[in-house]
Image (cartoon, rainbow, N blue to C red; front, side, top):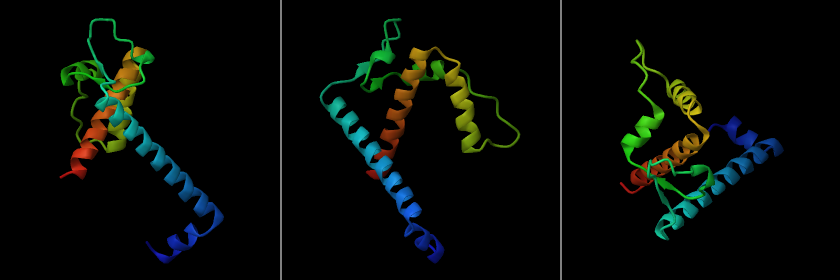
Length: 126
């Protein structure tokens, strides 16, 4: 970190920004811990795909097959001449999710959150 960045961290605004960032980080860690505890306690939902899945009523992690998630997300966008940036890819996926019914949007969000966290955990543990 350069001297100017360190100096800006010492201002009230810089410290406030840092505190906000740390609070969000702590909240994320607490959410991950709760999710882990839920799974360990058996508090998760297996996606049945039978029309009786109501993720809007769930507050626990959802387990579904990868092909089910792929179907909910829809077909992959055609390959572009130049590769999409991560931001463009995120916006494209988000647009596809927003086209889905609300209960599927929630299920997709929960599933993606779980996959991202599992990937992060795998990376942390080697």
